[in-house]
Image (tube, rainbow, N blue to C red):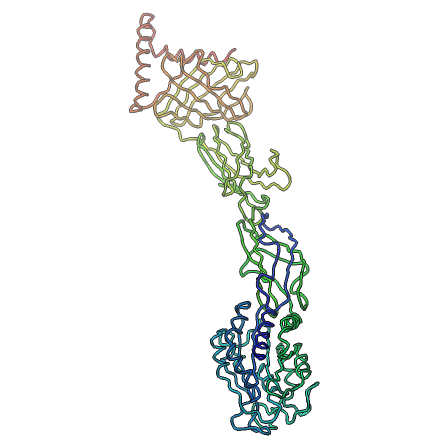
Length: 635
């Protein structure tokens, strides 16, 4: 029973040395933050560690010589509960079982003696395998009082099975390593060690015979345990009637940083083991999840210096956002060496938003359109990392502004970082379109606000060869001035002449065409546009555009508008007097045919009237046109 209590207390020692997962924390967690691309924030963090090993490989070595009969029997009865108790707190704990004895060639030895036997295939996690291995043990032989303890010390770091891959039962480099020896004798050592007596001859080693270069001493094997990070824990038994002094076991264990107790000390074993476990030096580090795009740095830096026992480590965590917009989640896990990953895990979620606008791209960069067509440009706004920037006001402007409708405007970028501006032009010419990201919504471009330009060429429409327009008359301009006009234009060529006079008082000018460059009639023959260049008061050159409608004879509902590249615009005006006539080749739209029919009816009526005056109708029409032109020459 005393052996069972001691072995159970050893299990409790190891359990205490391995903390429950909840004991290790990394706070605060989770961390959720929103950052502009490429920027950083800091978080005050604390890593709390209970200082106990997180995992362990445990070699349980039992002296199987004749004096250990009772302890072996009790170990066999309690093996399963020992394993399950340990694994209840350390699910990853693994065990190896060793039977130690003595050599047949030692004084008093017999052929059945066996100095060392590994009874498990390396380290096993199965409690059934652990129990089955202990069940094979029998107490026998031993001869003289000292036993081959040094051989067990040696094999703890030399056994081939422990050098195998972890999955095959080999030693886990992240685990704390313990060798727990249950016995009642001193090691074979000719010179002794500490309080252990001189017990010649030296341990024979693997060849089982003295000499040969492989004999083992306590000093040498204990140094080997220390070099390989294996802590020796020993429990002394007196059930066989003979036993070595406890101080011998204490000196042996202390050489590796471990401790030893009597099997009668079960009441104090858990405290003793926790104390020893906390004496195992370890370092702490922080492991960032694989392929994490979030940047992390820590002050002070990790890993820590070696430490023992519980630790509370305050530090500042700097989180740096990726440069690409999105939502990113990473984890940071505290690790110990030895030990590996702990339960101290932080989750960090970063929502990355675009940085300030840095680039504006305006497309199409160049374009050519016919006047009156709609032209659209799209501005794409991005930050310095190429992220599109939604919600940004873009200001657009067109130069020149004359007849450009609209000549300026604003639009807000959409989810794709794009804003679109459309406009038309009534006159031909070359435009420069400018757009800038109005980041602060000031309405003016400030330093650092990106911009771009595009160019636009407006060209004249193709003239209709069958289109012919004659007109003359009077209007009141939008400004309230009286104006007179007269002219004719043919699509064939094109050719013609135009004259327009604004009689003031707001504007006082006389325009005379230099040329006619394009003449276009609508499909229904009810409207026409004439384009060309002209002088004003006999000097300079401006582009002009005349738009007329022919709404039937004798012209009371006809309209006239003239627009100039210098900004002048008469507005669309119904004639106060005069007439507009649009002629197209036969085969035009039905509406045009109706207009022609109406004009013919009026013409016939006029002809009849002038027959009495002996004047041809054609002459009347011509004279009306001439009189319109004449009226344009004077106020």
